[in-house]
Length: 236
Picture 1: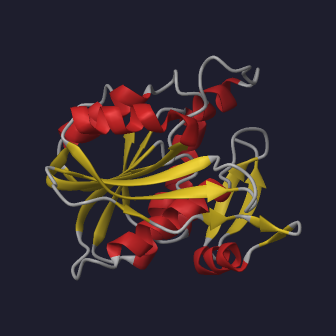
Picture 2 (picture 1 turned 90 degrees about the horizontal axis):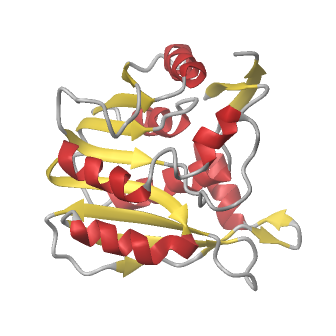
């Protein structure tokens, strides 16, 4: 999959690849993967496009607030011959004209209390004051159908708030997975699969370790092999 990215601005990273693979692993429990799904904060479009590539009966919708990335989401969909409907604007304020079977997102999750980049593009893409966690989960609950699925990744240090807000808005965590930079390092990221109005017990997937002796682990190499993406940097 060829993906255009900005020369000066936020580029997708390993988090999105890991989330894509996590979603695929959890969708194996379902025979018919179909219907409308929304990639929230689509950026260059990578997450939604990968899923639409692999699940032909899913209908891709993208939501993006930044003009530069609205352009890239559309350009990458066209380049890879994937149909997508783009919603322009702030996810928490858009009045969607449909409900969704599934929402996926690699949202801005760095705490607004940390030192920020001076690049406006990077600020919006990285820091959660541009899309607060509670507002994100609340809006997902409104636009998902009664058994809708929500997949996202987030800063592991905010897990307490994640659980609190998911419960508040009628989500149940079906599965989660922790990402560790190395096997002897603390987890830095958590990936969440939650479902509306579910009473299933939560599954904790085996941890994903990124590096071993400065090289990608075999698990990470498998993920990159499956995503099979090629980036091209452009001015936007």
